[in-house]
Image (cartoon, rainbow, N blue to C red; front, side, top):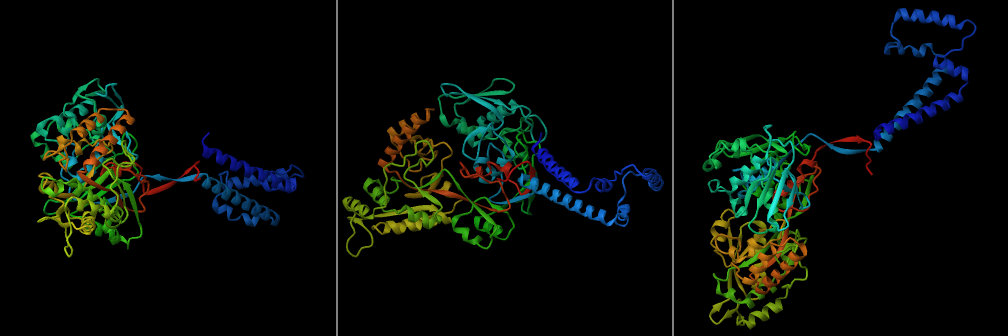
Amino acid sequence: MPSWLTTVRKTFKKFFAKFYFIKKIFKQKKFANFLGVFKKKNGFVKQDELDKKIVSRVSKKRWPSFKQLKYLGQVLEPTEKTKVKIFSIILVVCLVALFINVYFNSAIVPKNGGNYTEGLVGNPKFINPLYASLNQVDSDLSKFIYSGLVRIDNELNLVPDLAEDWFVSEDQKSYTFTLKPDLKWHDGEPLTIYDVLFTFEAILNPEFKSPLAQNFEGVTIEQVSDTAVRFILEESYSPFLENLTVGILPEHLWQEVTPANAVLADYNLRPIGSGPFIFKSLIKDKLGNIKSYTLARNKNYYKRSAYLDELIFKFYPDFETATEALKNHNIDGLSYLPKELKENLNSRKDLTYYSMQLPQYTALFFNQTNNPVLKSLAVRKALAYALDKTEIINSALQTEGQAIDGPILPGFIGYNPNIAKYGYDPEKATALLDEAGYVQAEGESYRKNGETELKVILTTVNKGENYLASQVIQKMWQAIGVKVEINLVDPGVIKADVIKNRNFEILLFGEIVGIDPDPYAFWHSSQAGEAGLNLANYINREADKVISEARQISDPQSRHDKYIHFQNILNADLPAIFLYTPKYLYPMASFIKGIDTQNISTPTDRFSNIINWYIKTRRAIGKSNK
């Protein structure tokens, strides 16, 4: 029996128990008269039958109408009126008791309804899994529209999405996936294994020019059955599963598009996927720029439909403008709030600030080729000892960050809290520079080695957090006699003008490393130069060997040991100074509920539990608030 029905049954049982008690109090004959059940004596029954016939001629209805009930007070005796009042009071009390009982045995739960509007910085270009990684806005929107074989949940675990399950071979070179049954595209067409094959074949097809192609180099994809597909790797690679979060494309639509013209297809802005939200509409200005983008709840989503009816996105040129829009209630939330802009929202008291941990580290990368001074390990160590990371975090991040000493972050395989550290020690920094031959003559502001002045150029992105951090770093380095020139670069050109050609001496920059700590892309020598993300152009054969071995090991403890070994090598060479891992600040109107994400692998993962967000609520009987 349902719990709510049990509650109602118990309440009525108590009511009738009280009713029986009242019956015992009153005299049996009078109480019987009150109920209309009269004793048969003195010919009263005959008169009663005549009365019934008269009434039946007036009305054929068994029960009196409301108009007739108005005259009840005129026909009842005073004692009967008193009894009716007592009975009515008891009835009201019982009903109130029933309501209270039901209320306290229920809970407030989400229900469908309501819209959420978020501000994004930038504009959508390719809401397409093949290209979305090139643009944060595209990545965000693709999250709602497309589903992958696997997904990252709000605890950074890889869990099934379109896949029912998967199997990994003992040698870690074969991954077999089976699809869930009865999957559908937004247009109602069935999602099949042929859509999966089409998507990954498109990624590998050079004509599509997908940046994801490098993630599947040397990978063979084959159909196993009508519901299963297998990925075969040339060599084992532990982080491979993360690559399979990419959204699946509908073959029945994209097979009509010529690969060379894929970037021109209308489906890039009006996509059809299988995710929790469906494209509804977009609005452009006179210049053709998209100003807003609306998604509607997918009522046929394979898991369960989201609570929110619609998601509306508005686009802004920079965070300052977007923050002003949030301040003025033009949007309900902002994709990211730079720490230095938080005080601009002090007037809006209805905001909740979600502080999420992002696997990103900010470091100072040395380019020893562009400045011979930096070839000296003693100089690099002195620069490290001169930095107070706590003060940098407090000044640049308003305490929203954590100091680090290596590229593998807390909570990940390979993190070592006891790694060799270069703590804040300006006296040691001064002694190292003296030993390296850079002395500071009396009356001089900066150190020299003969005629060579100790000078470095610090390059960073011209935005709040980086700008503030660079100011603090400049002050600390100049305090030990190092002349520091700051080079601020526009965020839009930092990759093309600075990073690609390694056009810097020291670069203050942040890197997002993902949910797997594999440092290959950032520190293996093959990733140095224009093609890779090894920003310091670090080359160490022993480090290469350890990194390569670690990514082929599935045993967590063995990988952990390898990564500790790698970090020890890295810290001894000191090609970079690791500063901090920042928090991702996500402001949102407090009427949006259900956000419980604390850890994200990319900014897009702030939506990892979007189907649980809600605005409206209802009470569910049989549930407790306790």
